[in-house]
Image (cartoon, rainbow, N blue to C red; front, side, top):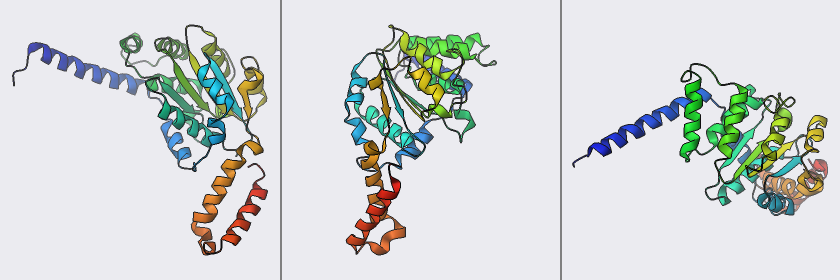
Length: 280
């Protein structure tokens, strides 16, 4: 088959482009949040989080411009599992709109700072728009083709610029309380960065975050959220999720398989476990 000069030129150009993109991704060396996502998703049960996915708060968040939601609750109430349920639902139902997410994690030092979150979101943002790649390429070149690392300020700026290139973007951030750099200016502290992200009319961002109800988070969130933008994860709201989890463990868990032929005993075990859980 005859190959034209133009086809050869295009092939070389595409190969160079892929290699350059690989270098940029390596240079940013962002932590991978999909490990947290997959781990939490494995703990989900059928119907888990359905109460929230069908709620008015979630429906309004999806339709309002520059919308915000804060889901807060005590340790162990299922925030991270709910985050993963939300991410999966958005991923299943969004068409070509970019979905970005990040899990702050006390157990992983690479997932505890604003800077590493920025690196991750930049890599996740689909760069189908040529302008986005041009911006990243320009940033890469300005730091001696990756021989120096970008500043936190430059990461903040380029992410916001890239977001402005897309019609709509969805962002889910889990466990804000596990971020070690929450306070400070928009280029230093996570909470100020969130406010800066939502204030521009040039962007259409849907931001959903989860955390424990820590005082500094409550104080900052109160400045950018209305009352109906705050969803406390109370025991009555997550009771169905707990019930589904308990039911599965009692009916299918190996440790209780001796009671499988005695449904009345299984019912009693479930009842007692639900009372002990009391919202946990």
